[in-house]
Structures are given as C-alpha cells and as structure tokens.
Amino acid sequence: MGANTMPEVGVIQNTDADNYFDRSAETMPREALEALQFARLRTTLRNAHDNVALHRKRMEESGVVPEEVRTLDDLRRLPFTYKSDLRDSYPFGMFARPLNAVARIHASSGTTGKATVVGYTREDIQNWADLMARSLHSAGARAGDVIHNAYGYGLFTGGLGAHYGAERLGATVVPMSGGSTERQIALIMDLGANILCATPSYALAMAEVAEQQGVDLRKSQLRVGVFGAEPWSNAMRCEIEERLAVKAIDIYGLSEIMGPGVACECPAQAGLHGWEDHFLFEVLDPETQAPVPEGDAGELVITTLTKQALPMLRYRTRDITRVTTAPCDCGRTHLRILRITGRSDDMLIIRGVNVYPSQIESVLVGRAMISPHYQLVVERRGTLDHVTIEVEAQCGVDAEAFPAIARDVARHVKSMVGISTDVVVKLPGEIPRSQGKAVRVRDLRPKE
Image (cartoon, rainbow, N blue to C red; front, side):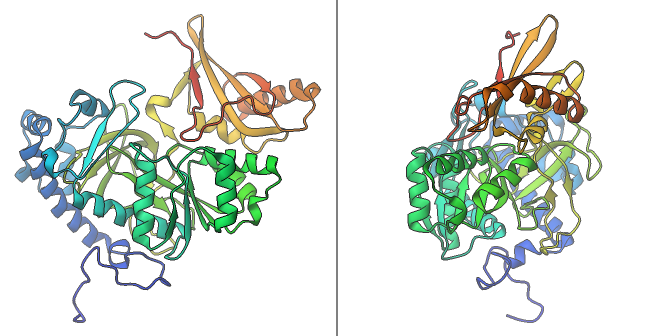
C-alpha cells in the first residue's frame, strides 16, 4: 500500500490489540466522513425513488428529485418517513427489492397494530454483522471472548443482530435468548462468559434471581454488559455495575433502521458513537421539525445510507436525545448520541409538566429499601392525568416501613421531577419482571 493510499472503508486494518474494529472507518476525518455520507446518500435516494412507490410519490410531491440534492443540508428538503408508513404498506410495500432478493425478514410484535416488517439483502446482513461487531468491539468485547446473548431470538432483531455481530468479531457465542433465568445464571458461571448482551431490566432481574440462589455474579468472568432495546437511566447503569461487577455499555438500534448496532458507547461511557458512514443523524424539534442547536434535546431522525432492501429517508424515531460532534477521548470521530432519555410518544403531561419515565426511574433506582423494579400507572382523574408509582420493597424490609418509604419516594419525585404522585409500596416480587423490554407504564386512561 502506497504512503498516500487511504485504506478501503470496511477492510480491517488493525490487530486485535488495537482500540478499533475498523480503524479507517471509525477515525475518519469529519470532512472525509461527510463526503462519504453524501456519495452514499445520492445512491440511497436513487434506490428509494426508483424502487419504492411511497418514497417516489413523496419526493415528487415535495418537488425534490435525487439529482437536486447537492449537499447534505439539502436532505432537509425531503419528506419524513414514519413507522405508520411501514404498517400502511404491510407487508412488503416499502421494500426496494423483490422478495427473491431478500435474504431475511424481521418484524415487530405488532402489539399496537399491524406488525412492521423489515427486510435485508445478503449485503445488508453483512453490513449489519460488521456494524454489530464494530459496536461490540467499541464496548470492550474482543475476538475469543465468550458472549452470552440473552436478547430474544426470532422476529425481534436483537438476538440475531447480536449473534451475527459476535461471530463476525470472532467471539464464541452462547445463543441463550430470553427466559429460563436460573439456567442463564448457571451457564454464565459454568461457561465463563465475558460479555453479557441483554436488556438492562432483564440484567437486573438476572442479578436478583442469582442473589436469591446464593450465586454471586460479581465473581463470574463477566467484565462487560452490552444493554439496549429500552431507555434506561444512569442510576440503573450504576445499579447494574454494582450488582454484576461489569462495565455497563449502552447500545442503540431500531428494526426500521437496521436493528441493534446503529450506535454504541465505548468504555468512556460519554455517549453512543453513531456510525455515520452508514447513517445520517438529525436532531429536530419534534413540534416544529426545525433543527435544534448541537447539544440541545430533540427528536432523533435517521436516514440510512447503505440499506438496499429497506432504504429509510428521514425516519422519525420518536426518540429524544442530544448529540455532539466533539471528539471522544477514545479517538473515534463519529458523532455521539448523548443517551436516549425517552420517546416523544412516551412523554407524559402531568398537570402541565412534561415527564419521561426515565426521569422518574433516575429518582427511584438506588433509593434505600426499594428494589429497582417499578411501574407507573397513569389514569385520568377528572380532567387531569395522574401518576401512581408502584415500587417494590427490598427483601427483609418490614411492612411497617412501607408508609415512610412511600412518603420518601413521593417527596423526592416532587423535588427532582416536579410532579405530585401517589406511591404504592409492594412486596418483593409483586412488580412483573420482563425477559425482554420492560413494561414501565400502565396507561389506564380512556381511549380517545
């Protein structure tokens, strides 16, 4: 290779001892990164326009054809894509490839309506595996590690996404999936797992069951946990790190864009590196759709740059976050997503105060005498919405202390979040445990 020859993006140039899975991509100067983004954006727009009727119709209605997008800023002239578009186009109306060119299909559960069906070409699957390997390496996993994968397998993208990425990394995969918590614990101890992949709520449930069994997971060979698929607070991170003795790393993804591996933290835990060579990220005011200044909170909007089967243009994720392009101490140059604080459609308005469940979680987790398991019950009282917080006492706490615990929680939520709530303290084990995404809110309000 000549002295002035840039290594090809996607080709692994490093040894396992390096900090990067793909140094050439992960440390690309921002000017070169933006040039690559623009070239890939033009290809994506042509693919979407020529092969997806909905994208073509919306481009024509907005008066924007792919050739007229001459800068990255021109992206803002394009219309948004919504989750409802996938449901309205069920099952394959958003695919840019015929079914005989699609290597795999995943789908959401469809609990709130029709399932959202997503497809991948073989090259899409390869890119996904590469990005998950890059994410796992960023988190601290290495070739030769034993990765215990407790994300659900099947139509949910979490299990197979992590699995293929771990294999691409060169790790040994234990494809456990969710459930059978006692067996999960036994295998973590017996097989010497180094990396745990799970939802953060299930990781805490595993820690709780292990403690009940007299198993100390802090003495296992686990050193890193890669947790995602649901918003979680820094308080929960601290709780997980204390009870499992791991570095708890946040990973982000969504099926409509790819699956897990869209962004991931490094051990600096200073934001998730969004892989900008494959995705374009915007942060917009969810009401006005105007860009917010860097560092301000807004809704994350993502455009795919390399997806073949399911190109997504300006997809409204509904996830609320902030981003920064400031360099990270790890040396990666891709922007950092400063943690997902919640979803715009999960936001509660309680007596005029905007509240995300994760804000309440940050008050609850780690408080004396209560476990990190909770639910928020939302109901209508007269014309106003009201929240009751159901928390669970730790084992061994006397029931006589429950009223004082309830008062303490209510007082701190009022002080830190700014809303008045009722608090119900329940016995250990009474809050439902989730083996996948935790159900934090029970909405009892009448449907409009």
